[in-house]
Each structure stands twice: as structure tokens, then as C-alpha cells.
Image (cartoon, rainbow, N blue to C red):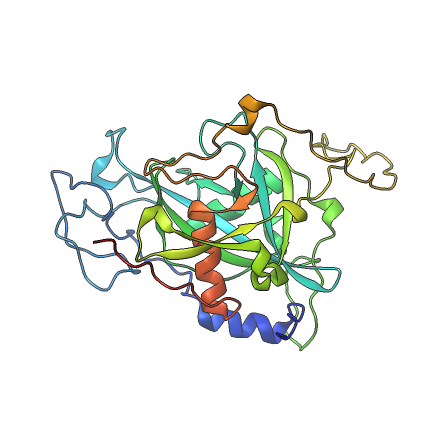
Length: 318
């Protein structure tokens, strides 16, 4: 039987920081290598790649990746997400969200808070923190950025996504430095923006060691990129009556006990064939799973942190 995960503490965060990439990005940002070259191609490489690409587009001269593609509406953009770590009831968790079903891209899917960079953002870390506050009401002053993962491309948003890892503290900076277990913001202070987020998922690290929650899939159908999809059905937080945005100086309503969530209705035949989260390559999910780019990032973090062993690569078919 594997040893249970300990709650996040200063020592664990220090070790985790060493396993991540430093979050200080170069300026200008490295060239995009995923998309076809522009007329002014460059051979500069991404910090996540070991070699340069001769088909790269020119390096970005601003945070949103506009650079020499300014005015080209088809040019790839820059996005940033936050992978929020929390202690909930003295257990380590990863906070995620279920996107509103009315959204144009990735509707109804589990994702991390984040979005595309604005020209007013000081950095991509600022983008991730701004979007997290807009979507989940988490103040940037409570987030300790530990590092980042290698960026990847969102096929739905047509943007390069930079994932930053941060711990959500109960109090704003300065953060504790002496050895101790770290408290996080209470869940009732994390209020989803209903225009973008339909529900909150608090995924315990213990789910990463539950075989019944894991299934092997291949990222964008590439047999060389196996990862675990993670069933998060049991970790969806019930909605509270006070889960709504407040106007300035408006007091939160008195909140009673959280009611027991009612079972989900049985889907109709038409609904049971509804495909959630179709990607351009044909990968999709009909369950409440962490999959796709969010699942890929979560797996990469778990592997770096030693929380999860990578699954075996697939065998090519003759």
C-alpha cells in the first residue's frame, strides 16, 4: 500500500519548486514552432525544446505574441493558466473548474483557470493570476508562484499555453518561510464566475493513485505521448446558494449548511450521444474527466513532482 500524501508544507513547496522550470520567461518570447512559418521566419527555439526549428515564426516582441505578426488575425496568440495547489481539510488538492457549457471553446470540460494574454498584462504570470481572479475570485496576493511547465498548444484556442504552478495561501504575502503545514483559502471564499465557470473541482492528490480513476490515453492520438485521464466525477463541489458575485460593499448572504447534492438526471438517448470536448484530432470525452491539454499538463506536473509514474508508450500498429 502506497504512503498517503502529506499536506503541502514549506518543505514540500521548496522541493516542488526545484522540480519545475523557473518562471522567468525571456523577452521577447521564443518563436512559435507549432504553426507554419510566417514570411519573416526565425530559428530561435522555445525554452522547452532542445533544438531550434527552421519553420518557426518570428519571435514575439510583446507578451501576446503579436511581434511581426501584428495585424495578422490568424497569428497564434499567447495564453497562460494557473495550476492551483491547495490544502483542503489537511489534504493536498489541485483546484480545477468546469467550463460553462455556453462557452464557444471547450464548453463543459474540466480545465485550469486561465486565458489569453491582454496587451495590458505585465507578464504571462500576470495573465494567469488575472484570469484566476476573474474566474474564481482568488486574489493574486494569495498565490505563491512555484514555477512552470513546458508550454503546449491549445488546438481550440489557437494559442500557446504557458502553465504556471502556484500554491493558494490563506493569507496574502509575505508567505511563511519557517517549516509548517500551510493553510489555504477556505473553499467558501472561492466563488466561480457563472459566465465562465459552472462548477469547481477539488481533485485530491490521492486520486492520482486510485486505479479506478485512471485510464491510459494518448495525447492527440500520439502513441509516443501516453497520459492518464482522471475521473473527477466524485470531486465536483456542490454549488452553494451564495455562489454569486457581489457588488462592491455588498455583504455576502448568510449561508446555511451545504445541501446533499442530488443525483444527476438520467440522460435522454440524444444526450447520451452528446460528445463533449471534441478536438481537431478526434480525441474526445463523454465523462467528467481531466483530459486533453489540461490532463496532459496535470500528468506532466505529477510526473515532475513524483506523484505519478508515466504510463507506458503505445506500440505502433504494423
